[in-house]
Length: 83
Image (tube, rainbow, N blue to C red; front, side, top):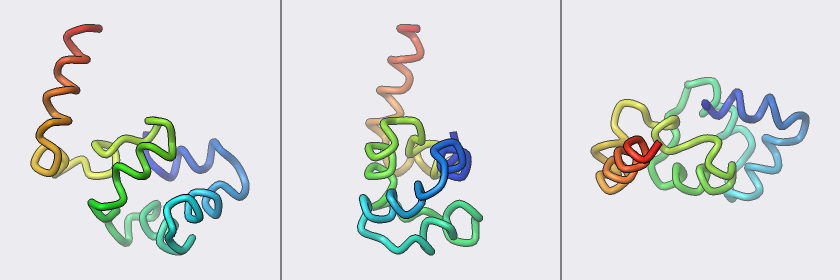
């Protein structure tokens, strides 16, 4: 799920709450959702954790996540085989 969809489903105030959890400004989150700025690599795992896995690092960085987190690539393949 992308970050914008997640925040819309959570309702009003969710951007502010996530910003507080991550220690960033709400404007940063708005820019990530709009695609005007890319989610920084250092924030991806924190977002994944804050959303309870609803928004994954692969969702946030679809073009380069296998390069950034090769161990995550292996664990996703293993989960896919178990399903």
